[in-house]
Image (cartoon, rainbow, N blue to C red):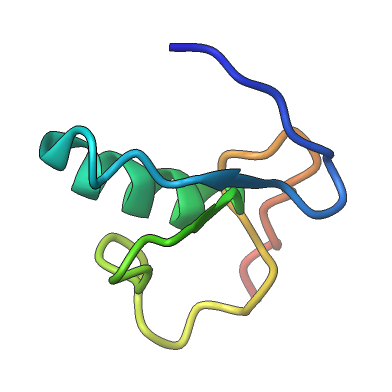
Length: 69
């Protein structure tokens, strides 16, 4: 499956109603890449810690690790 979405506000329709197994794939894609799936009933964190900074997506090319202090 391949699709495209604008980089500044990526959003796609959820496929969960058609393919139930995509549930966790959409959650992971939202959390790691910032792609919002419209109509997904449960977009919430499950890999990153709860206090992860909003709007920071670790699998995007522009993501930079912060040096340890």
